Image (tube, rainbow, N blue to C red; front, side, top):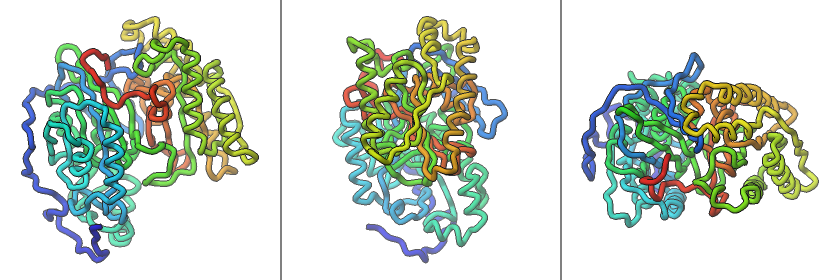
Length: 504
């Protein structure tokens, strides 16, 4: 294993530890394209409510950023993967864009698991960071595919200048307030004449221009924690204040859907899933520990449907029961404190299944409380949106969407209050509701507006996890969205087998 002593000399900003060769070339050429400076517009993640809308974030603590993505002519799905565990990850050393660490044995194993997870998925091209840990992960995942991997210097990890190479406790002792600033206010963190997170956001926009210009419908990108966060943030029009809000774990998979808009405008964007890992999203992982957690369980056929599985299943209600059982098994190791469900029949039954498995797992020790909230019910809203079809375009600001958004404005603080009981050292609240309700809750968590609900897609049977490392009164950290790996044959595919005939 590669090791570096704690007395490692602090490097200058011109050191190769900070920057690999900036003149590194691509293994394959990237076609040119014309770019237009227009606002990014977004598409709904709801299958029947496929309305494209503009993102407008009003004065909240988290901000939006203008984008100048070029128009595209065909739908694209871009799958992002973070590299496996590196030697410096294991040592607790600050890597930044340095290129001294390599994959550990665990990292190689994680990459292999990701390869197996993506083996059946079809990709037209793979982009990768040129740094060893990412490039090796890409090589393992890409396997025997014939197309060459394209390495792009802009996909390197965040440049952290004087921090790079230091153990985390060294960063704390040597830089004091600056290190604390990096931990607590990263978007405004300043070092060696640079704002690293702001620079990263700018670089991510450059990456998107190249990735979206490539002539392919299904794209794999293998890179790093921070740069993947920036890619997701810039694609969704979210500012650098969202750094560390959308988690990227080692070998975690995220998927973004881009679809052509009319008249050559920027593409519509939807986050199909965030940070799907080879192991359960509820398992312990790196990052800050959170004693307060919210788990959103999406159940119901009235909205976002997993690739039409309800249409192909003879009895949709029976499928809901199957999905509920699989969710309950996934959550069996979670010692939850309360389950809050929509009063709808499907969600009530799903909550009961989860409760029964939970009580069996923690026999005699479970203090689980079951409750219902009318504000989590969106079945009627979903039914209306289905009937509207393409008219959802014109009714985005109608009473239907306003009602959904207003309900979430009541449901979100109620769920946070359930997490706030000081008597509970560790508190896990599970909310069971239709996907539409949980999309609105994600919007509330991220301080968005109702016009931005189209940024997310959730499938029935999926699990979304939000952690609160600083408590429920502070910003939630989205650990994953739309996790469906536990659903077996009902799991939503990571890539599209045929994007030619699929409406994203």
